[in-house]
Length: 192
Image (cartoon, rainbow, N blue to C red; front, side):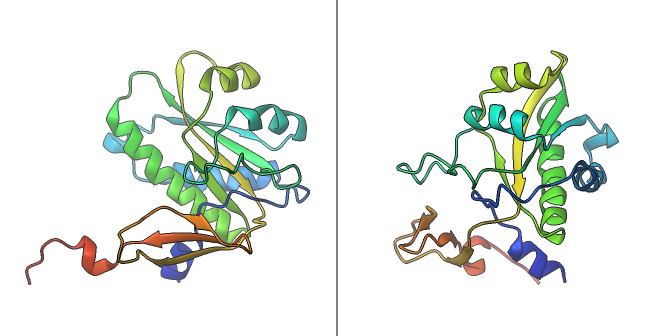
């Protein structure tokens, strides 16, 4: 059921690094991404796929993880992603391409969960370094990097508390808590 799949599609930041993700699986996930709606059906997105351990190790330090967890430097060795999908956009595509990217990546993450994987979309990326590592041509802009692997953490959803704080946090057992606003708090009008 779609509601269950959506609830299980969270941002996972710790993985079982030793459990590989194959290129075949990455192809299946990007195939789902390519089927997403696209403004004017322009389809400006392109992808670089990586599940090579050495290349993954080079990409990892180019990424910043979990801004709200200021004292957490990111996944430890053994908890790092087993794969990455780097999203590219043809130069000069503008704002519509950003919407296309969001739609495509939601499809990709839903598919990841269906394959027993989890992922995290990372926007804080040292793009010049990633471009050099992966030899990405200059006629593409680097959008986001999606980290993928078998999750090695529990992520739970909960209601935003009375203080309105939406920052995610980890408890003493390292369970990752993600506050979500109540439905009644986000609907500002209705007729019917």
